[in-house]
Length: 102
Image (cartoon, rainbow, N blue to C red; front, side, top):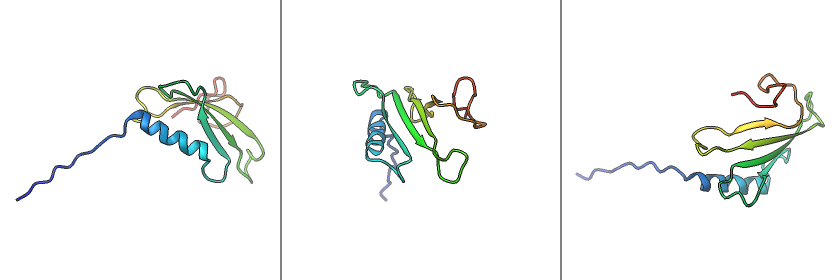
């Protein structure tokens, strides 16, 4: 009887980030969200920037929000830290620092 070994391969951090960078550069969805790297020379791909255009028919309609994302060495096992640079009134965002609380 042949036994099969089941291997689970984790995608290396930089490969995952390269895939995400490609998606961000191509644009996803309806174009209201965009993101990319802050510094193209950052070989660790840690610092990112993003923009969100407020969705239609919401209190955020017509507003543009700037974000900073930081992918630590533990990404993707742990989520990136996200900080709004634009002021936004949401329960999950610290009003003083702009840091998104998980």
